[in-house]
Image (cartoon, rainbow, N blue to C red):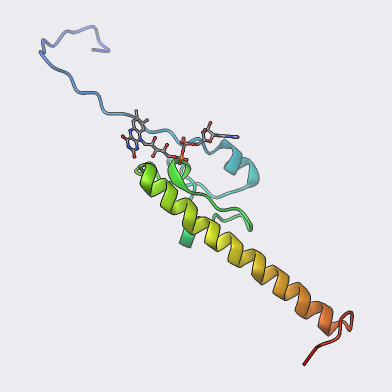
Length: 103
Ligand SMILES: Cc1cc2nc3c(=O)[nH]c(=O)nc-3n(C[C@H](O)[C@H](O)[C@H](O)COP(=O)(O)OP(=O)(O)OC[C@H]3O[C@@H](n4cnc5c(N)ncnc54)[C@H](O)[C@@H]3O)c2cc1C
């Protein structure tokens, strides 16, 4: 033990200590919880607009199938966000008279 004492045992179980690799996300300004895991909303959206996460970077309990599922959900959300952006830009162009409104 740390104090030098010995405790006789036949078997020892050592639990893993999970450490988030969230340096990149932290450098982008993503909010982390008290243990350093990035906090997420629906489909892995972080607090940084345009940045989603999936898998172990945010969810230490994720196995391969869970991480892949989260990646799929994030991809769908990212696609929807990009479509929203395109629609907003198109509507703005119509409003500014840059393109003709077919209606
Ligand atoms: C010992 C062990 C046994 C496991 N056994 C199983 C099992 O039997 N079945 C199962 O389903 N799951 C198992 N898992 C869990 C499984 O490995 C994870 O659930 C899965 O790998 C999560 O995928 P991920 O894409 O989230 O993360 P990862 O597979 O860790 O992928 C993240 C990738 O990002 C890269 N990366 C990190 N930071 C950066 C950066 N700044 N720039 C560029 N790249 C970066 C890393 O190098 C890595 O390649 C096991 C895990 C461990 C540790």
